[in-house]
Image 1 (cartoon, rainbow, N blue to C red):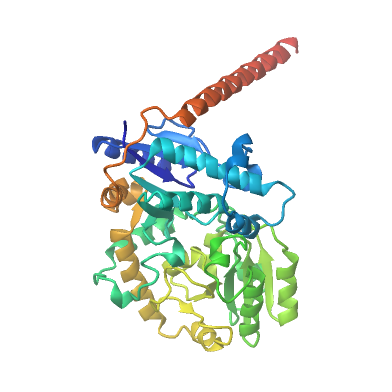
Image 2: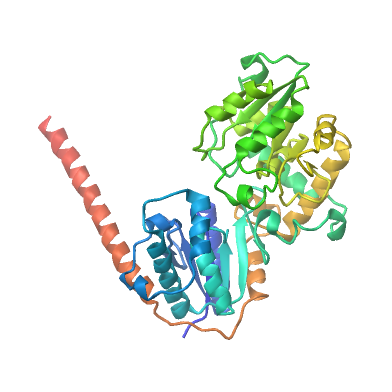
Length: 447
């Protein structure tokens, strides 16, 4: 019998992330635990942990013929899948039952001492979470950190649902130092990295000149976000979707001498035309763009507005006043200008006046220095060189919450089957490469 730590993570196994997970696996092994990571993809490089691929969307689930034996109320899971992915002609009920059987098999064999669950709000994760809690297995949550190249762990949930988000700054034991965030800021501004792929920065670009915006006009960046995401359906209590939030925002600034850059989220696939039409409808000058780097936008605009994008953390690194229309970790801390209701245009005015903004920057720096020291775990070598937390913070979090009495099977049947399938796939991929090389050589010789 073996002891397992199970991590369900949205990791792309980049070089930095893979090194991080390998280090964590080594640390856990020294403590007598095996690390099993469920992820949406397999690592390309060498890995030292057990790995299994999960399926996020119910529409992509392989139906288990035994699903007919699976009982229970699946309505809340199907409702959540509808929120994330809309209508479908596929048999989602059978898929949800198949997912339940799949997760039951994993928990039966692994019987983990602790589960670390990323997001936890997709239909499949809700199924998994309910099974974990039924078995009284210790559970904690994982998400991408509010600063790029970091992870954040919490016992309550993610983003605005975390323990730290619910506290006022005065309730947190912060130190009167900004050293950590100053180190990160220098690294960030020099490296220009964020969570999502961006167009290349253009040093020759002048946004005001490109769109013929005068120096006296306020240049505002609005960050588009996804509707089918927890940032919208859980932590945007005032608006049903991003377009509604954008329209309200334009209404609040229509009497200002301003120009708005509405930057498309890299994964946004909704109706872009309705954002462009919103400018005309509200009588505000602006443009919807997807070809300008986030860093050029943050550098050159005067103000930033968003529902709750993690980019608001990056905007504060550029010391730009941020208007927040939803909830985030920065809520309740008098750092961003956060509206309290749909009639709260006073906060919009305070934001445009940059009221007490110096104090807000100071509060941000103190708070984020605390976050770096106590809450965020980095997978960047440069950050680790600064003395920031690495996988050891993750290890200590796990060790303080696990149930040491749980043991699982030595050989996991679902992994053994996966190994055979994976080996077959790798062999086939190698054969295709050899065939392609041979064909190219033949073509070259014939010529």
